[in-house]
Length: 280
Image (cartoon, rainbow, N blue to C red; front, side, top):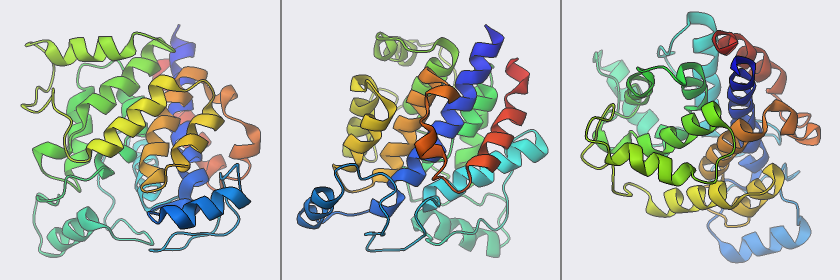
């Protein structure tokens, strides 16, 4: 039982990182006509050899700006045994929450999180934290601490996403996962209650698309491909879908043809194994 949980936790971390890297060349492509041309040329768009991102360019196989944060958190957990801010967080793209975060750091503020950004950053980087604390009573508290390092507002906690991921890590595939999470959110005695627990907030399209990808997926590869074919913020949706499916299928279910193209795979796997030893 313990070994199975550890394997699913590793699968969540690796699955998230690999899916993020796979989707990175097509991150933030909102021009659907351009996207259709790309998909016609690359019907399996993962690890597209040329970046089509109109905002930043990275080599194929590298992480997105979201994935960079996830790797930093993973390395911090591995080195320190808990989520601590790494200052400053470096990345090829400084989106709104990181700009606010760095501004607060430069100002010497004790609370560094951006107060007015509630985008999906809050969940894309947290597979390592959920994997580390899955099954522990303080999981949501630790997740909130990690989120608030860069996004310090109530709308960015995304605890429904994290409850899904924890459920899959602890239980594996479960067709009743949605019912289970909704039951948790309806429990007046639940941990870390939020006024908006029952609402879909912040980015409803991203939430619905990612959740749909998790609940309807039959294979890891196809689920990531399907969400990539929708365009937009492919990496945020892909990383969450990859984490949830990775938790269900374990490390062995993530295709070698994908992990071999993920540049940080060896490092991610090493750190993932280290922080999940507690589950064994």
